[in-house]
Image (cartoon, rainbow, N blue to C red; front, side, top):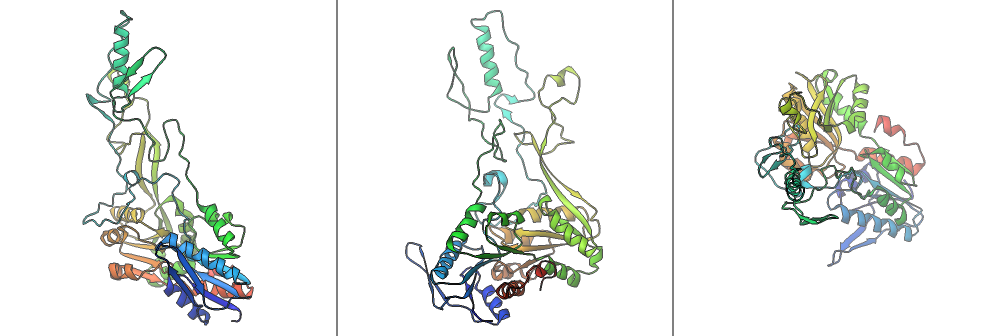
Length: 449
């Protein structure tokens, strides 16, 4: 092909070489260096004047450094009079940040890579027990009646007792009222829950980085973007340039047909409700049955007492160990349930991305507990950060199938035969060829390459 230059960043050099081999073109030479203070220096050795430039950089590894390297390379090509610059991001960075504040102690996500010898893979995350007071349980003690006979002393002391008992688990220095300053011996003030909400329902403001990443790419000079399996397809709406979101669905379907025995009898399972549409699409095209693992975290406990006797009516909130096992301080229940029949069947977990592997390993344990004979995990982007590799090696998953949108050499050495890597370089190379020649890319969405 004429007037085309393919440049590769430092995030995934092997993928760049495979794409150039499929395109039968020589890879452009880019010198990427770092100064002693950590700044990135880019020098392009080949001429890009009036050329169609494709820059391949995946959002993995040192994400911030790799993304800054991509921006500088795009700007360097535009400054060198490139005709068009296309950013090829097999894994799009900053596309799946949570909408709640990250707190490792609350959400369970690891803050560092710590390998353990034993994992529980419980399907429901642990939650604290009901709040305890220093003098006993909140549900066991009934506050004393108010002494209204002596307003000067009795009412004040009784009200102080009520205040101390009502908020005994929290500490402030003092409360200023219109009449007096009432000192309280407490521990701490109530804070936000795991969903980032206070008692009033106000949710902490979270910086959504999708618009920022899109604006940075456009400002640097990118004329087009190519990516694969965006975590949220609506992410394309942040751009005012064309974005081609390629699908790994044809590749995963081909693997199921070729390598899973009696694939018509298997069950396609979505590990959460967010990926249900992706899993049902594969299940419908293969004619397989579908199952869904549903995580419920926002079911409020009923505040009406289950009994009508006087002893139960005195307690403001009751809980039953037979119906609700996991209760947190905000009155929420954490449960996980399986919708569908998987007994004595081969289950195929389908997801777009595995990062810490908490969700997919818990889902595999739940499937094995429900009688599944074998569990496969098909994911597009296998990031495997933190202690994910160790968790996967000890999990109930029999085989993990992922793609090489992220480097998998180290992961393959750790997981061995349990991990199988599918090559996506041919799909990316064909999309580059079609865009360069002005042909349609929509055929790759349904049929792959």
